[in-house]
Image (cartoon, rainbow, N blue to C red; front, top):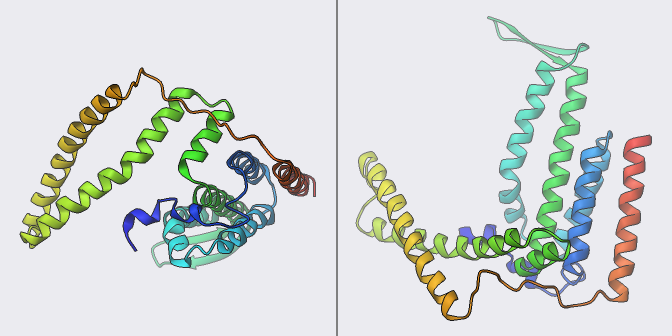
Length: 258
């Protein structure tokens, strides 16, 4: 699997009920789901949202390996938070670990708080994965503009997203050329090649930025990119929005008042 595929939206191009939902509906759903996860006082509410998103991701045939790669870092950070909460927060001892020099005491309140935070991280990450992996990037940015996000932010995001992958390809080309010349044999060569790689990438980025800007000017760029969502919402879109909103409202009530 190419490294760029980990963060690309190639799966959003597949035809399925999930990818067919309007990007504006999915963006609003993602915002509501994140809000419900953050405000919930119960662990099972973010996990329910995570399960819903996981089912949707599986339905568009996203490889499990790719999901694991995307979730690895957030899950590691969530695990660190769980451990710190377990041993540093609370008053009711749950267990004690004797390390000879000192003892570590796990607390019941810390475990509950750590599990809640961990469930929120899992729920939030799967919501974002569902949004980004089931929606083409340009539609997502146009949906953000439709929701009145700052125009300059949307334009910048469009350009950044496009050239992340261009620069990733540049890195791959430079690194492969260095490998052919045994540039990564020995610690000193590794450090030297890494420094050269970083410097070359900066210079190529600057050069490409100048050429792209000149090309945009030739094509009539005047300081603003026309980013407007032309497609109207259909009856099915409104029905989907009502169902998802009702589901999020129900989970919010369950998470806050039960």
